[in-house]
Image 1: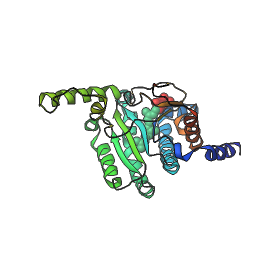
Image 2: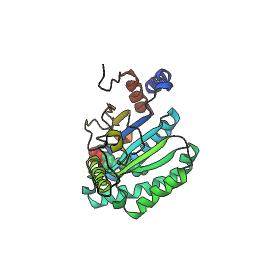
Image 3: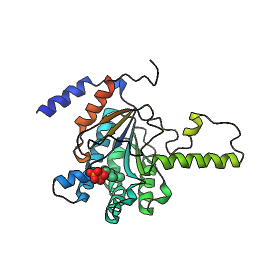
Image 4: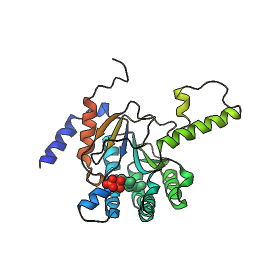
Length: 247
Ligand code: FPP
C-alpha cells in the first residue's frame, strides 16, 4: 500500500515534459540476488531478464526516448563458461518471447558493442530483432553486448588512423567528429545513468558518453528493480540542476 501511494505520488510529480531522453542502466546484482536466496546464479540472470522486460515496458510507457542496457561486458568473458553460455542464450530467448510486445509498444532494438566476437546465434537474434523492429518509431532499446568503453575508444582511434592513411580524413577532428566513430554514433549521450546493486562504479561503460550524465545508484539488486525505482530515478533527475560546466 505504501509503495502504491509512493508510486502514485511520483507519477503525479514527474514532469512529462522534462524526462531524461536517454537513460542508460548498469544492471548489476543478479548473482547476489540469487545467492541471498540460496539459488544458483543462473536464477538471478533469469529473473534479471524479467526485469529487463518490465523496465522496457515502463520506460516506453513513461516516454523515455532511448534506453541503453549493459547486458554483457568485454570483461564478462572471464566468467565460468557455463555462465557465459547461459548469458549468451538470453538474447535469443528474449526476442522469441518479447518481439510481439516490442512491436506493440513501437520499440526499436539496436546493438552496441563488438558484434564480430559474439556467437553467431546471438548476433542473429539481435540482428533479426533489429531488422523486425526497424519500422518502429518509439523508444530505442540499445543492448550493450560485448561492450567495453576503452576498447570502443581504441576501435574509434584505429578507424580514424585508417581513414587518415586512406586520405579520407585530411584535417584535425573535433569532439563531434570523434563521436561518429563510436558504437553509439548518432545516439545522443545518456542524460541519466542508473546502476543497481549499491555499487558505485562506472565499470568501463560509456566512458566518453557519460561525461555530463546524471548518476543515480539504486540500493536494490537488478532482479528487484521495478517501476517505482525507475520513477524515483527520473524524479530525482528532475530535481537536479545540470550545468554542463557552466554557472
Ligand atoms: C550483472 O550481475 C549482470 C550481468 C553481467 C548480466 C546482465 C544481464 C541481464 C540482466 C540479462 C540481459 C538480457 C538480455 C535479453 C540480453 P552480476 O551477475 O555481476 O551480479 P553480482 O555482481 O551480484 O554477481
